[in-house]
Length: 274
Image (cartoon, rainbow, N blue to C red):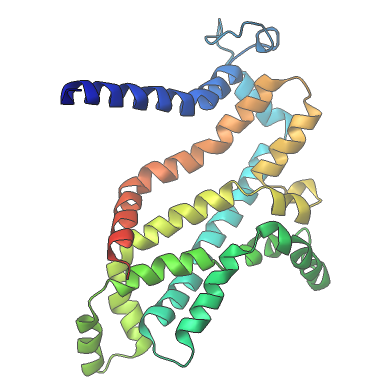
């Protein structure tokens, strides 16, 4: 088989795979612009005639979309910032500081990745209830502010930074926190951006924990609010898909803005880890 034919087959396979991956997304956008009568037509209509753009403002009138969006932004941004802080502190300690049992403690910390999240839901909910945090931002933010994956990711990147920089700073009298603040963090932009994208996407799409820990409509996030809206607007898939399209626009913008840092961070972390 010639090299040209191999490339043609590879591009054809990638094109088919890309379309298959985008199929649900395209169906969602198409359905969001359909009238009630076009939604359930078989065979399905891909290009609504005419497109009903009024479905989008209609959703804003049917549900408190702005409140859901505000809750999601507050929770997602706060969790992302806290996760960057806690993971960078822990990653720096495990990568650069020497203390007894460091490697064993890191393996134990890393072992928490093996525990399914569903196992910790009941203990976490009982703890939130005991603290009186149910239906508050604290319950949505604090349990997600610590990440073993983030610690592992940043530790691997911190290990790739030449130790000579740290030694020179120590000779100049820099403290451990000063090394972290003025040397480690400025050199770790790609890794921090990668973790920020992961944390933002994970928290923006979080569904099960916000569903369990919130009862009031005013505390619902977008995922939970759209879920309840799907029950209340039974059969009105055009409105449901319009709300879903609006909910993913911010996360797409964040990914597009940080895409180059994300790719660079993944490459550097994978190549530089020890």
